[in-house]
Image (cartoon, rainbow, N blue to C red; front, side, top):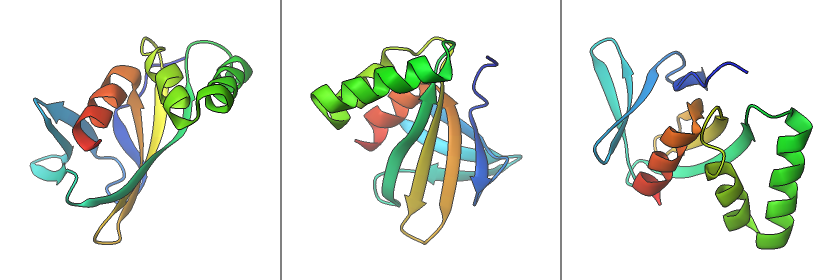
Length: 116
């Protein structure tokens, strides 16, 4: 499996890079920057996660974690596979924009720390 793109792959800001500097999350395109923070994100959720393992193995692991421990278990199983993982996150912003983002597991963990 190829590594995650760390990019906005659909919706508003499609093609923009997703970066974290310190405790700041941003979407960047050339010299334009859109800062993503608790004040302008109305909702964000994990859409899917896939590690270097098979899709079905990842799906079953996430399903079992979610069934046993709820959303916290799903997030924990996702964070625990940060190596070659690709994570899709859906963002909804207070201004009505929506973005689908693909990031690696390490960046996903940082995003959770910033927006939680």
